[in-house]
Image 1 (tube, helix red, strand yellow):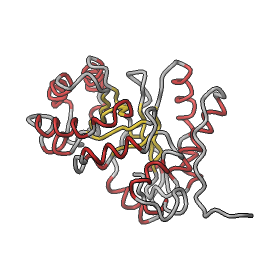
Image 2 (tube, rainbow, N blue to C red; image 1 turned 135 degrees about the vertical axis):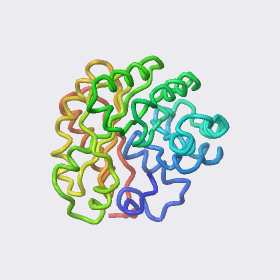
Image 3 (cartoon, helix red, strand yellow; image 1 turned 180 degrees about the vertical axis):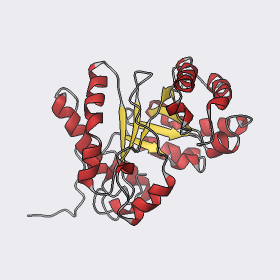
Image 4 (tube, helix red, strand yellow; image 1 turned 90 degrees about the vertical axis):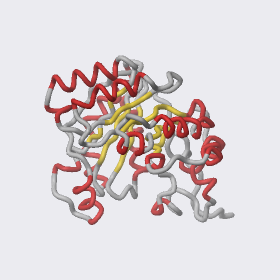
Length: 275
């Protein structure tokens, strides 16, 4: 995500070698979604470069490869999972959670497979599961069954909040594409662990994105007061303003909770000048 083209020269210096882009991103935000790991397991040396560019307390939430979650549906992918876990090892404590995003067709009848899978994972990592099947949100029994499976291994349920996005029709090409692709899941704010993870999708209009996240400000503040350590990811259909929006969200929470540590100050993006 830190290589987003529209950020170059705006949030990240330009030109900037690929092996320095994550370091620049880490000056804006202290966590990142590892979505690219869904499509391919990175080389171990690539992951070692990520570690060199970030402090030990930087948070990676890395998505498991799709061959594990979507193609094999959590069954019979031991070799692929082992290769993935070996590749990400250089990140060490930076691995905040491993993100198990299952397909929308993965429903309540598949929970036993999820249970077996989670119980077989190394206890050295924390795990967070994102489901999209409507039954988990509409059927209280299905939700409780899933929560019990997650609670048994200390895993979190990751909500993907798209309610603000789907509130009104799309107005841009990026929004129209997201309108077809993103799940319409009801709002969920219940945390199962001391490390909640939230994915929020706003609109390309920053004002509408900010308006849509207002309920989360109190929720995240409450979690912090309870001693939890939440991670909140801000998305928009084009993600053009995502780093700045993430910092605005953090500042708004900090206004409610002044003892919350500030985010780092980003390095200057423009060219150096004598005046």
